[in-house]
Length: 167
Image (tube, rainbow, N blue to C red; front, side, top):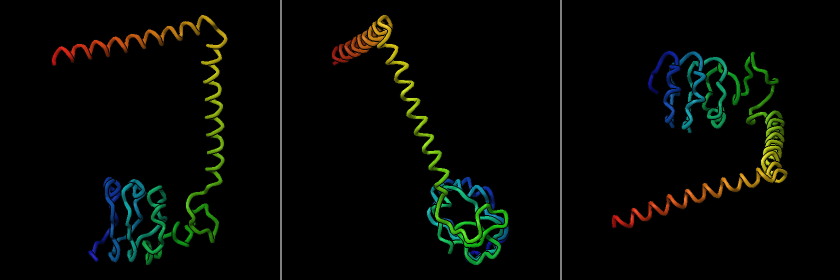
């Protein structure tokens, strides 16, 4: 118990390498700053036994800290992982915290892979199809890479020769 009072400063989000934050049994009030989710190294958090209010911020790092006891005895605190639903929450009453909503992710993941496959197919056949169908472009393409290969081999041979002369 540190006997801290007042609000948690929003500048705490700048402490990106902070691993442990123990603020329990104080007299802190106000909202939990939204930038708590930018504390990417945070592995232990305890804000219990304070007078914090409002919604618990969501974010990738805070979702890993899903133990409700780290927020207990803050009667005006609401949102996941607590069972208290905020009045402005879109979640249904009785909804408990189980991680992210996967139905939206599944659709986004499906369309991501579809667009990736289409992009690969179109890109592959735009290059390879052109080389297969146009003989002059095919010869120019392979001639270009032969020239690049020769320049690289010549550069390496010259560097090795200079290095051997120095020895």
